[in-house]
Length: 325
Image (cartoon, helix red, strand yellow):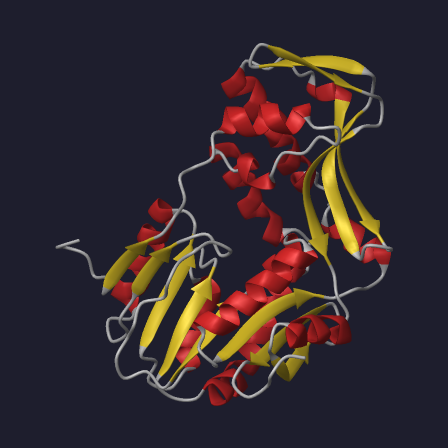
C-alpha cells in the first residue's frame, strides 16, 4: 500500500465459497436454494447495474432523492467530527451525498465483502476527498471484525443504504442491528428500508417489463451451464418473484416449468413441475414494524424520512441512550 491514498486497509473477509459446492449442495436440499451472490459473475454484475435504471424499480432513485433532500438534516443529527461507516459501500455514490454534508468528518470507513472491488472504489473516494482519512474494511457484515480506531472522532455514524436489511432473515436483521449498535459505540445508524405497499408495485419492481430482473436471476442457470458443465434448458425455467403477505416479503427464485432431470457437475438432479429454486427474499416493513425491530436491538428511532408516495423510508436510529427491553 505504499502508493495508496488510503489511510488503511483492514481485511477480515472470509474465504470465498466454492461455486460448485454451493450449487451441488443447494440442488441437493429438499427445498432447493442457491444464494443470489452466485449470480454475480461478469454477466450478472452487468445486468444488476441496469436494474436501478428501470421504471418499475423505485428503490434506488427514491433513496437518492431522500438523501439529497435531507442531507443537511442528517448532518445536523450526526454532528461534527463524525466517523462514517458505510456498510456495503459499493461505488460510494450515496455516501458522497452524506460526506458532502457532514461537518468536518473524521474518517470514512467503507465496508464490503469483496476486497478487490472495495479497494478500487475506496481509492477513488480517497482521491476525491483528500481531507478525509479513508480506512477500507473487507468483511462480512455478520462476521467477526473490528472497526479501526480513528483519532479526533466524537462519534460514529453507520450508513446502510439500498434496503439491503430486507435481504436478511429477520433473525439476521436483528443480529446485524445489535452488532452494529455495539460497533458504533452508541452512535447513530442511517438505514434505508423498503416499505410495505400495494402488491402490484412491489411485484413489478422485481418483474420489470423489459425483463432485466428475469435475465439477472436466470443468469444463475447460465453460469451453471458455463462453469459447471450443466445441461440446463433455459426455456424450461422462468424467473419468479411473488409477494408473500403473511411473511411480509417478496420471495425470489427460479421455477421449473416441467418435471425434468438436469445434470450439474456430472450429477443428476430431479425437479418437479412448479418447483422453485430459491435465490433471495426481500422483506418489507411498516415504519412501526422496523422501529420495533430496531428497538429490540437497542436503538431508538430518532427520525424517519419518507417520500410522498410512502414507498421508501430512511431511518436515523440512535444507539446512545436507550436500554433494550
